[in-house]
Image (tube, rainbow, N blue to C red):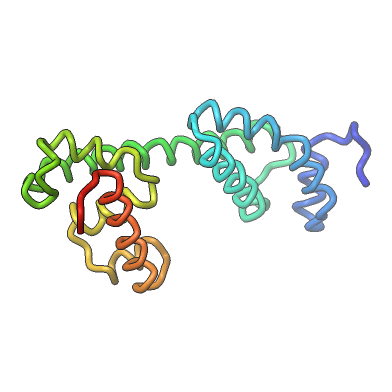
Length: 179
């Protein structure tokens, strides 16, 4: 076990040199709560914040050799976290923009008579979970095949089809449309 006064830089140096799991666990214990708070403030979404923090620790492991022990571990770590959060926010913005494009491209008749305008399509997609919005945008707006979607999402073609079916079913349920 490491003494509580051991610096982050020493712990990271041990992790770098020896793949010292106890040193890495100590870094997690020290930085996880604050990182989660920062990510939640940036993303305004608890689940996304947890994903961002987890991804940050994964990148620390993968990039451990790039860390310079003469520099601040906290500065390096929180820079990685901020970049991940900004990437997630950009992705969120892209999804919103794609939903807008979907709303503009789909004729009202294709969605059903209860949807009166393109803005309503955006309203319809907004409450869907991000994964469901993503699959519908990839399939409908971008016109990708399920094989292309599977490659993008890192899943099987069957999984992509099932996700699209689930998203459409949820969309129908939320809009009171009948299949």
